[in-house]
Length: 410
Image 1 (spheres, rainbow, N blue to C red):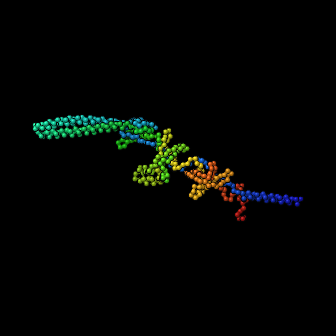
Image 2 (cartoon, rainbow, N blue to C red):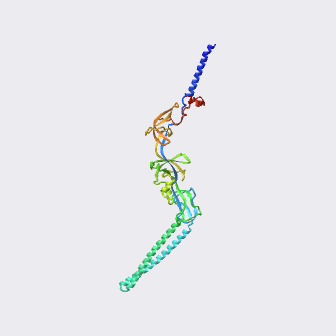
Image 3 (cartoon, rainbow, N blue to C red):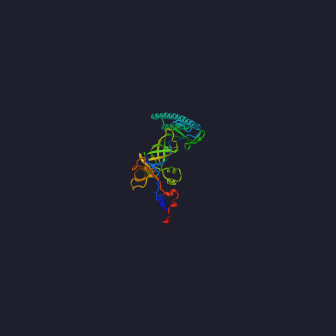
């Protein structure tokens, strides 16, 4: 009996040792788990390199309609938002003073004309007297002194008539001016447009002695002008005629397209400097710590969606490619020298990672164009989290520290 059980015990010992060996191999010699990665697909679409700028929407034309007559605004004929035509009545100003000035000028004109008539009569009388004296002198019947006196009186009468004729012309000009000033009591629209602001209310008194006070602001809103602030680092790359697109803060997914019309030669700080007494342009611009130039473009606004002073998130397109393959820039690995080739990691169908060399075209720092090396739909690694060195199945099971031999035991 004892002889039969000895081989059985041996078998059990051998099996136990084998199981222990398998466990040790699994715990200390198992391969590291595959790295945890984030991937993105190779996609086909449009790609562009652009300059970003923040713009402000303005009316294509904005006019401050002012009063050139002083007095109380007796009537305001428009309301905010009204569309008006050129020549339409905007406001009426109390014109009593202007009417009185016109009456006075007309009275002065009548007086000057009456005096001119009298001077002409005197001139005719002097002319006749001079003729008589000439006839007498020619027949040696009159004195030389009488002829000279008659000639002098004629010249005096002629000068008085000419002077009075000039006085009549001056009086006529004053009448025209008074009539024009009376016309200024009616404020008319200088162009077709929309009333975007009412500055002076009905009943308010305006004084146009030194400058024309603004009654309303009139704007053309069928076309809007956008001024986009371009940084000095980007201005050298921007050219007139480049395509532009922008979005509103309220509609970030809607692209409105236009073409760059102009780039202002002076920076945006010039206007600020002109308004600050005693400061030079460089002082004001330096205080802002950044230099910007306005890029200008126009866009139709038939439905009135665009409004004055809205913010336009603008992109000025430097170059673009349509229908190309692209990947996120985060997927690009090391660059091969100064070439256009990069290393990327691709997730295979079996989940394993492989290194691959690709050729890159346009790069807008968000996505990069793939010229060759990848196919549409393939997945590239954008980020990778590798397990720490020495990690094993024992760590995953939670008892690696207890089973792993101490370095001192080696």
